[in-house]
Image 1 (cartoon, rainbow, N blue to C red):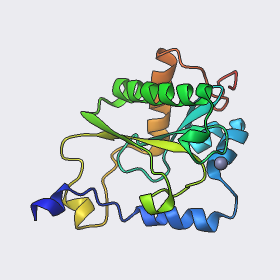
Image 2: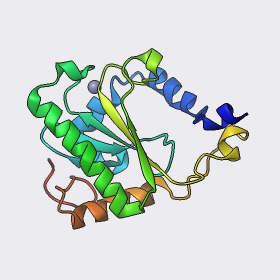
Image 3: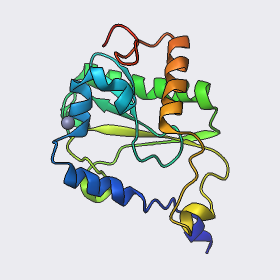
Length: 181
Ligand SMILES: [Zn+2]
């Protein structure tokens, strides 16, 4: 059983993958980028010129965020140098922000390229930033097909936005904050 215990099981992700197939609304990342008035509803953390960061709707752990390009591009080799630079910098800044806001013990950071590699949305490049704590993968996830996410998405979003303000990150449009993009 030791090998079994090393795996991060996430059967709840099927809901997410199915929802993408059923959404019939095109690419949700493009939709998020195009509707700054809904940033709070979409849990979009902040926007830059070419990329944005958003909380994952179906998180592995509390604070699981995505960094995505504004442009609908599938591969890293399709990015301009400016896009690539901002993509990496924003990934770094998301780690800094989450560290400041919720004090994880570590992170998993990764990109799933292609559906067979686990990408739920293979045509729009995004990287996963997954905060980790000792003991966050336990019997509840492995046996019970359930996770314990101790903080609601809305409460976490507000907490991250406060941390982003303290860090001087640019505001998003929603929730009475001024100055989109
Ligand atoms: Zn897209």
